[in-house]
Image 1 (cartoon, rainbow, N blue to C red):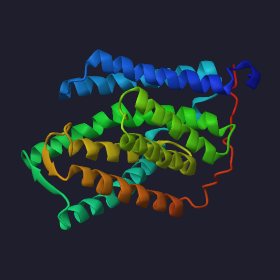
Image 2: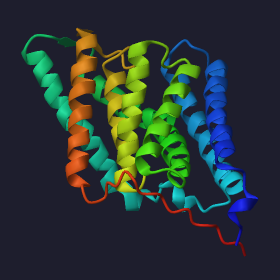
Image 3: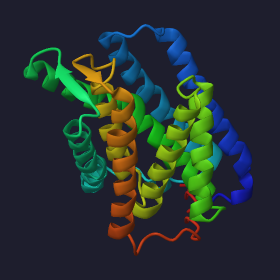
Length: 273
């Protein structure tokens, strides 16, 4: 049995992995360039997962000296219900938000292409979002970083800590440089962290992350299949305020017996031999 004293101190483990995450995203961004096209998006998605998963495996073994299970990524067979739950928590209220925005005339949406093309792009974006954002970001921030924080800090403080780290990450990699984007990153990370704390793993957060990012990209420049008038209102109301608020309320209701903001996460020691 490896003693806790033989591994790197917690602040250094957090710093090493958070810094590595920033460097990975900056490197891949520089490698692939800033001009968007679908093949580059696909290559970037595959490379991101291909780099991040081994990075977390190495960090867990070499820095933490703890088993993989603590990171909260069981098999899809064990986690698919929570994956679907996370997706539904965002998609259902977002659909109501879209209906509200369209119904009162705040937003106008027109299709640039055929319905079949829209469906093909949507299906592709689900896969690309899973590989490029949802899986790697949840594994690093809600999996590795939040879990490590939660072994020393109450769950609520761990959620807050990873949200700060995620927001700083967004700023450093260039994804969140404005006040509204920084606020989005922070609130989104708080919600994802709450899902992690309540459900015990990151599958629900992956589902919510996939749903949000896929729809945001589908109705934006990445998808390039819709023309949207009033995109700012759509983003704030239908993709932000309504689904984020409802997701939080559903989580509190559904997992009310599992949410303990003062609890510490277990920190099992990996057995050797």
